[in-house]
Length: 145
Image 1 (cartoon, one colour):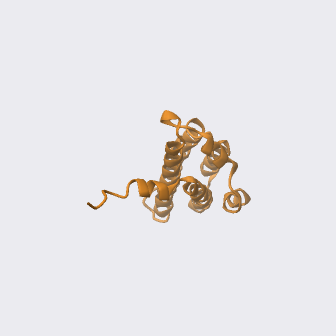
Image 2 (tube, one colour):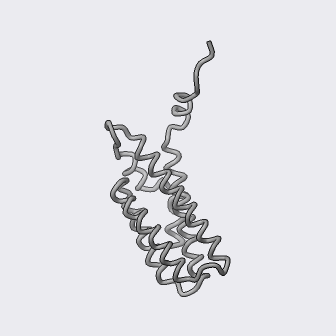
Image 3 (cartoon, helix red, strand yellow):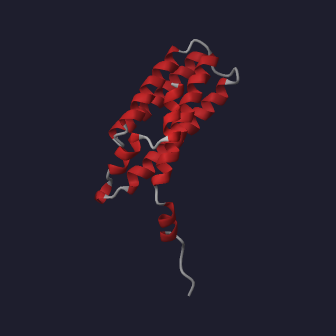
């Protein structure tokens, strides 16, 4: 997975092209971007917590694998259904398999770190597509009298 997680940092992922073609309610393109950004950010946050937990002795490897597998499977489903990000979905599927094959906490943590890098970088590219400046000016507050 190491070479795969470097791709989205250097080059705009193909999934971003597919995502930017998605439309939401009233045929606009903003909400799919906002939701995809939120979903990828949430996955990074959850996996970061699980990585931190894996550094303690509070949960055993099997429990971590079950929890992580559920997160990855749900996000894989959303990547396909809502965003048509096939590459990301395939990456999450392979990551889920790698998590389930981990034989130690160290191996588990290595897989999680790869997923964190990839999902974080994908989130970066999604975030770049959102017109934050336009949104901010739209919601700048009431004008002074």
